[in-house]
Amino acid sequence: MTFPNPSAAFDRMLIMGNGGAGKTWLACRIAEQLHHPVVHFDDMHWEPGRYGIDRDRALRDEMVKAAAERDAWVMEGVYGQLANMVLNRTTTLIWIDLPEKECIANIKLRGIQGGESQTQFDGLLKWVAEYRSRMNNWNSFETHARLFSVFSRPKFLLSSREAVTDFTGRLSTSIVEAIDERAQISE
Image (cartoon, rainbow, N blue to C red; front, top):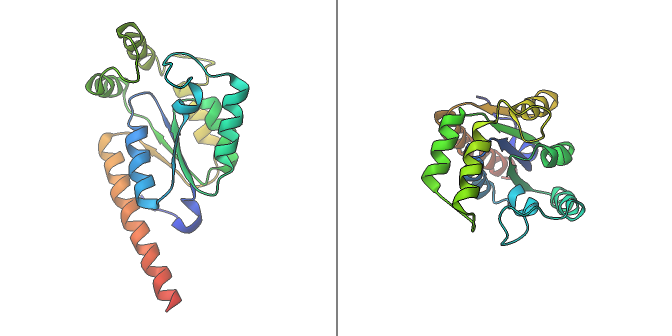
């Protein structure tokens, strides 16, 4: 796994994948290393404090576009439509593609969140299990594969927990090397 020069490639990173794949975990680790803000598509998609209630689409889209205009960020989410909206501003794309069983296990481990009910939680587990079978749906394997294939800048497909962990370690090394290189140039 070879990283591009982080000075530009890591300005605006987008992480996509199924629910429970570890997008938020990875986004937080990357943002911490790069000192970038994390932008969660869930925060823009859902009404605040009202899990399961979609935000007005026009308002959601405005929020996504405004966030994408920032100079630096790490965005994450399952929403292919929102990913598509920011793809032209994205400098590096990461797709976490884990087996659905692993995603479901991760969701069960973290439990019910954000005021969701048991019924909503069960619905989420079912929805995650259908990731590869959903067709003509923005929030699917099919859409993520298409977005990944057309993206022409640096991109990474992480297909195991080990690959995700390895990615964070290598990113950390790449950032340190870039900082050292810049310091030597400045001297």
